[in-house]
Image 1 (cartoon, helix red, strand yellow):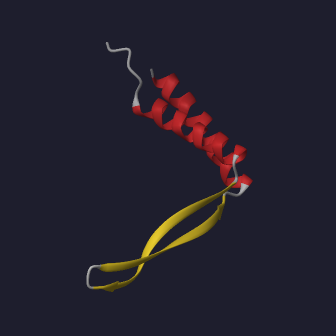
Image 2 (cartoon, helix red, strand yellow):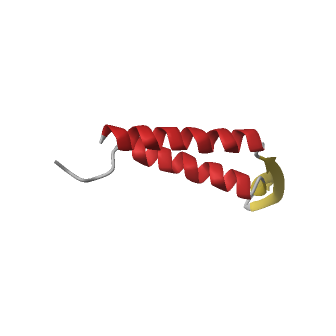
Length: 77
């Protein structure tokens, strides 16, 4: 039998990582470049920043669910 990780263990670990990351950095911004106008070969672009907030309840739920899924994956092995 192989000793590799099954899907539940990997999925649980990813959920735990996302939960911890959401608790550590609940507020982040992203930047997107949008085309404003095209005139022949000339192209005008604008950068638009958007701010995102991850509620602590969502991060905590992902963390708890990740622990449960990871435990289920280890138990199945």
